[in-house]
Length: 260
Image (cartoon, rainbow, N blue to C red):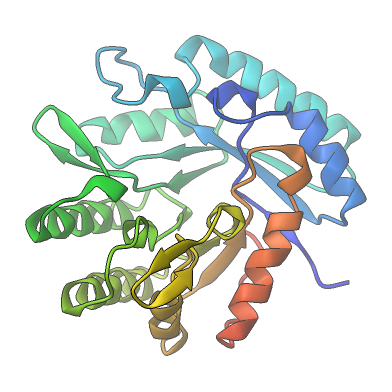
């Protein structure tokens, strides 16, 4: 069997997923997994800064996260890794280092969900102007350049919600792909986007993401591509990862197998 890993997994501790680490490992063993990484959304040290407190564990829950992942390792037939998915905020650059050095994260994922506008954080599907989208791309690439992350999750997230494929979105896509090539930073084909209901656009039905035209562009380069489930329940932990590999094959993309 072809190796199948998944380094984008969310547990009940992020408050919008189901399942404990041991349940994900049990399912992954049934499905033939070769490596599994947990990547719940990172907590922040400053409770005053958290535009999405309902999607992440608290700092006090990190110890539970570590203990439950260790329990899962004890029953696993493959390597199990502990990580966090992080948004890029330059003010928290040292905190991302601390997540590794003090709290034991083995890897960090850049999940670029929002653009920072003063005290506001605007989610990707709510961008309402070209300037906001451009600022989001700049912020994402700044995070990529920080050197703190093992890969960029859902790099085409900004295409969700029926955003049109036009000269700006083409340029934005190319900018992310070019940065990933220059930095040798893998970009992710994301399984949760495939599993969500498709949307109807002027060009027909499509996934919210991954977005075909983005990956057509990526396939013309030597960018590194990682395929992950973005699992939010145990049944999807490997099932969605296989979906992303099938998607990659449509474009002649050979994904890398993990981040270690």
